[in-house]
Image (tube, rainbow, N blue to C red; front, side, top):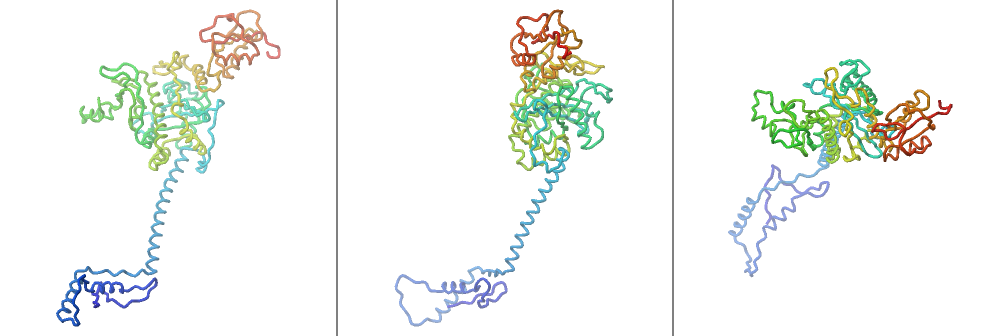
Length: 557
């Protein structure tokens, strides 16, 4: 027995209609209801009757009504029309367009930042970044980079244009090695021009002295001038210059994860109970609240454990955040109490080199370039706070070298360690300064050492002193010959006159053993063999070869 459908949602069921996409009707629903009305079949045989009573019919109708009331009302599915399909496609298309616009916006933002940063940091077109041009080199195949650190971005720091951090980084891009030479900021030099201190003073004033104007252009011109000036002192051809400030240090450390590891190696006496090799500089205790009457000593200890000092480390590996790394790079123990920094500025320079190597190691291992947030932080830091004289087309080469040069292949050239230090401290016009051990303004030993360390030539590496003596009767012949040898990367010892006597055109003596490369090259250069026995004069302890110039042919005079 068919039953009536109750009205739903205010609509009256209609007969089936043929629509696009098939027949939509309630036929299936009606069939299911009819099936529900079929009486249950019993497994036992039932007696048959030919008639149905009125009471049975009424009971059956009541059962249908109760069943209908128990069933939840069915929602009628709205027909899917072409308009619905088009609307859905339009919504999807708009969503995709919105996502693309967002991505393009992010890309444009990063792209604009990159372009601005690249023009501030590198010279040349942004399109040059797709090139991979090797770095410029000196005669030894090395690229020498002058790195200067200033603090003009720190409002509370006096002398913001003074280059309190100075370093030469020398790279061999073929052999994948590098040398770091820290330049003493207190090195007393002659400027050659009038600066705030006059015509001579500390080297850290020179960059600010030759800096004329503001902006990227004047920054780069000052870097070029500073590179030529420092190169003249160290006997190097400097190809590039870099100027960084405090913000660069902070942002770079944050970009590599916010922490770097530096090995603490203090020197000098320490107080009772402090482990030898520890480092502490109280000059930065204001970071802990020192000097603020509102900050108790207990609060200082809480802020800066264990003793209330901002820079206070035991020997061994120390994990530093950006702020602690920045101030360790400045620590030199010039305010009591302090320990572990007995060499003052020289210790500071060593720690600066350690921090640079730690940054390089962390950047290589942290996958910085694959992280958007880290790349963005680096771009911000570089664009506003870093100046270089590199070309944009050299950028890929720099990145490749940073990845390829291993930490163990980055070496330091010390100017104070060793049996004969190259630099020492002194006092000039009441100032505590650094001067060459050979004498103020005498950079001969400095140049020899640097040339020896950086050269790939075995003669330069041996650095065996050749003393030249004149017996030719030609005034200035020994000096002239010594200059030729020095230009050929030989190390020159004493220049003087030989005792009277008869000498061949060239006579060569060797003092002591070793220095085979120098001996071979001298014999080949002068076409003579080493004369056996001692030379006819007393030589100093540094001399390893003696060259005596005898009578010279008329054509050579």
